[in-house]
Image (tube, rainbow, N blue to C red; front, side, top):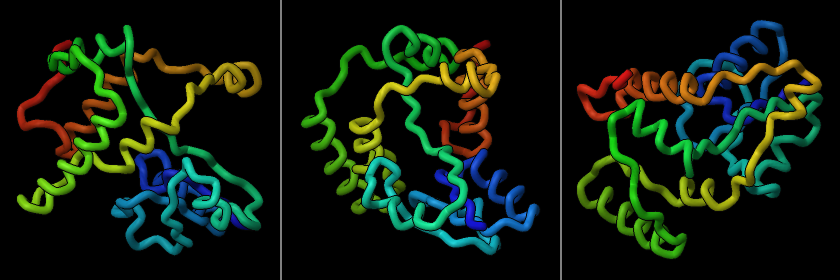
Length: 176
């Protein structure tokens, strides 16, 4: 029986893939770009944009189970103060309209090609900002007894993981 895992190359996804393989399941992994966490595993890989039905339709075909782990994480409004508190980095004081952000994406892509540096602001990240509706975990609480971690703890752990991956500036430490 085929099991599909979205965001399979992420931290949770790659561990779930290994667990499923250990149970003898056939895994079809939906990934975006980076597949380093899945190297050496015997799986079917699909590159897809989880926000696009047409992009994932073939990957879901014939699957018995789908683990939907892909998500867009955004901290805006009052919660954005938590990021500032945890990282010590001031939050932006203005928000960019999407048309201006698109120009920024195009400039970022061009600059990364010229300098041969990793692009950090991509069309995919802008698409994630556009397509991600507000999600609720109320059903998971009611039906699965889900107990969410406080947002402050989640953000602290997320930034610690980013730091361990080398994705933050050298020397960054939580300000807690």
